[in-house]
Length: 250
Ligand SMILES: Cc1cc2nc3c(=O)[nH]c(=O)nc-3n(C[C@H](O)[C@H](O)[C@H](O)COP(=O)(O)OP(=O)(O)OC[C@H]3O[C@@H](n4cnc5c(N)ncnc54)[C@H](O)[C@@H]3O)c2cc1C
Image 1 (tube, rainbow, N blue to C red):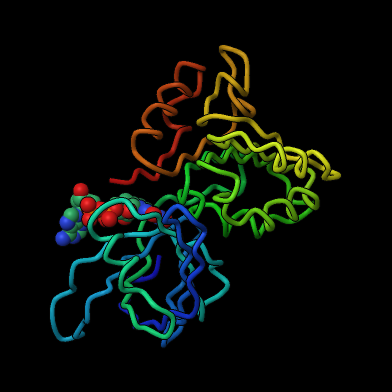
Image 2: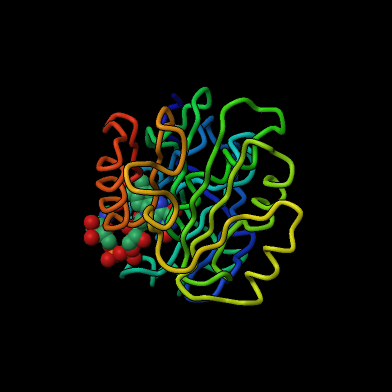
C-alpha cells in the first residue's frame, strides 16, 4: 500500500446534481500515489503550508479510477458544517489540498460481490463497476438507494456496464416514485430492477435469503444508520459476519 501524500489540486469541474449533492473533479498538481478502488482521501478547503499542520478536513471515497493518476473525483452531499463550507467555497479554478490514500475497504475481485450503496456511498464502488470486463468471472450485484432518480450518480456508466457485463445485476431504490423514470428504465434492452422506497432487503428477496449467492462478500457503503440496519438484516438472513464489510461513515 502506498504511503499517503499531500497534494495540491485545482478544482476542474463541479456538477450540481440538485438537493445539495455534488460531484467535484480535481486536477492534482502531481501524479497521485497508487491507490485501490474503495479507498478514500482527506480534503481540506483551508490553505495549507506543507511545513505546518494539516488543517481541518473531511474524508471522501475516491470515485475516480486508480488508473487515472492525474485526475481525482469525489461526490459529496451537504450534511453538516464542513460540507456546507465546501458548498460555499469550492469553485472551478480554485485550489484544495488532499491527502491519500487511506482505508482498507477493498473489494476482493476473486469472489462474488453484493455492493449496497446509499446516496454518495456509491463513490466507493464506481471505480470497480467501471472496470468490470464483459467476460469477468465473479458475479456483482449492485443495490443502490437514493432519494430521487436524479440523484442516481454515474447512472449512464452503470447502465452501459449492465448492457455489457452479463454477470452484473443492478437494483435501484428511489424514495420517490417517478413514472417517467420507471418507463425509461423498463424500455432498456437489459433493464435494472427499480423499486420505490428506502433500500429494503425484504423487497428484494424472501425471508432467510440474501440478494446474492450466500458465498458472496457483502459490501455496504453510506450513512451509518443505513449500514447498521442492513448489516443486521443480512446476518438474520444467514450471512456470516466476516462476509459483511462496511465503509462506515461517521
Ligand atoms: C470512510 C468514509 C468515507 C466517506 N465518503 C464520503 C463520500 O464519498 N461522500 C460524502 O458525502 N461523505 C462521505 N463521508 C462522510 C463525510 O466525511 C462527512 O463526515 C459527512 O459528509 C458529514 O458532513 P460534515 O462533515 O459537513 O458534518 P460536520 O457536522 O462538519 O462533521 C461531521 C463529523 O465530522 C467529525 N469532525 C468534527 N470536527 C472535525 C475536525 N476538526 N476534523 C475532523 N473531523 C471532524 C465529527 O465526527 C463530526 O460529527 C465519508 C466518511 C467516511 C468515514
